[in-house]
Amino acid sequence: MGTDNIVFLEVIEWFDETGKEIVHRIPERGSGEIKLGAQLTVRESQAAVLFYQGRAYDAFEPGRHTLVTANIPILTKVLSIPWGMTSPLRAEVYFVNMKVFPNLKWGTRDPVAFRDSELGLVRLRAFGVFEIKVIQPVLFINHLVGTQGVFTTGEIEEYLNRVIVSRLNDHLGENLDSILNLPGRYEEISDGLVKRLQEDFSHYGIGLSKLFINSITPPPEVQKAIDDRSRLSVFDDLNKLFRMKSAMAVEKAAEMQSEAGAGVGLGFGFMMPAMFQEMMKNSQGGLPSESKCPDCGNPVPGDARFCPHCGHQILVFQQCPSCGKNLPPHARFCSRCGTAVEQSPGEKKCPRCGSMNLPNSVYCNQCGEKI
Image 1 (cartoon, rainbow, N blue to C red):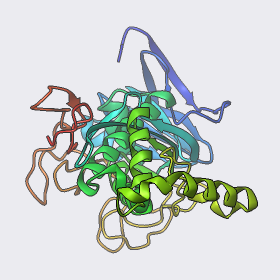
Image 2 (tube, rainbow, N blue to C red):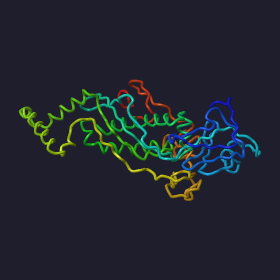
Image 3 (tube, helix red, strand yellow):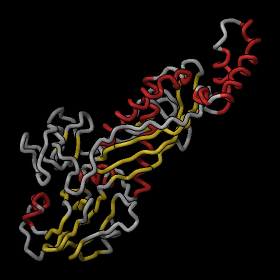
């Protein structure tokens, strides 16, 4: 972040006129000198996050706040120096929109490779929409805005799209032997995919409340081969092959007489949206939006900063990349498994084709081989 364009901030607020921004930075460019005693106004369904030297350190719930050492204790401890009431702090403020963002699109920009046990290597396309809500703003800023360098809604949507497509590829590779069996197991695979994504998204401080799969399609030539094979599979031997046209004519006549046969087509262009239960209730304000401790799961008061049951901080700053344990702001190693957490894991390189995949990918999106 640049430091050549310094803005002196005494009144800090943001109003989303478009209704489509997930996160907004103040100042938009350069760095800001925030004076102690500055007024910070946080609107309903917003959270304001203080960002200092590449890390998010504290968040403010809706309301009007006067920035003094008493209500920014974490930053005061980081600086480890006494502040006068007029001393400036060079930092940025990120406003996070805590509302539900529906109709975000996901899909395969390029077909992903799937190793089919009967058809060989097949490249699949898939498309749909999903719905998210930020539930841990500090974790969201640290893991997406800070680590991945994504700032706009479009960049966040694109990054989450990569996660969805990668997890779809992994889930199909682990749970499906052939796409010939996909229609019969569609609901089962979709349910497993959403559960997997909810866990992934939680590491970014995001809740996935709904996900729709609009279509999963192979190339046209593979689709035709599947249709032909499906027709032949209804016959016990080659003698019954000659009855195929008669059987198709009877099926066509039945479709014209009734709509009962409308759902038995053998095409592979599915339009079967699957709707899943919401992960969290809509919040009317407050921080974080969930009223449960992120560590022990017990209910906590809306204004609590620490859990009254286990003492864990309500705001999650970072998580262990190995076991997922919630960690305090300055942890360098996980208190549960000892893994170093100073840096997030980089992309994973496929040993076969050399393509780059997301850190926790199991199957390569390019060649379909297990990484």
